Image: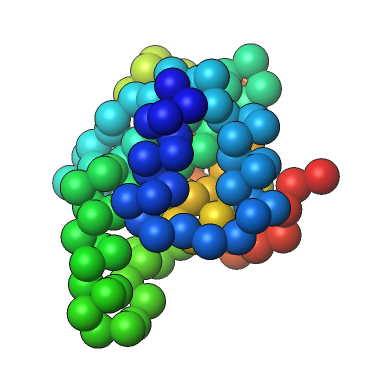
Amino acid sequence: MKYKLLLIFAAVGLSGCAGMQYAMDNYTNVKVVSFTSPSQKTGYRIFDKPAENRLMITSSIGNAMGQGALKGLTLMDTTPPEILFEQAAVEYPASTGRTCVSKKAFLIVQPQFEVQYDCSVGAPVAATSAPIQTAKPS
């Protein structure tokens, strides 16, 4: 499992030691789920921790490789908008039968986000209107 997470980091060409360390410390032993957002028709990899009401979301390996290649050719940031990651992150619990709302999203390492959610509210799954924060969770 450790190697799968390392492969994601290498494939995307990520940097940022603190963020990578946070992801390794918190998501190394979490089962990876491939998920396609119904609204976006885009693939993601989800590392869900339902007991902690949080997940890490990143582009699928294929999408990440394409984004990395395009970035290498154009020297431009090819990361999809952050709001798309949060939208997919709140669609995922619904696909598992949970009704949840997003509480906070944090950039861990480009383009991986941690999304904290709440399934106790019984409200329809929806993203919050608050902007995604880029500070690391404490």
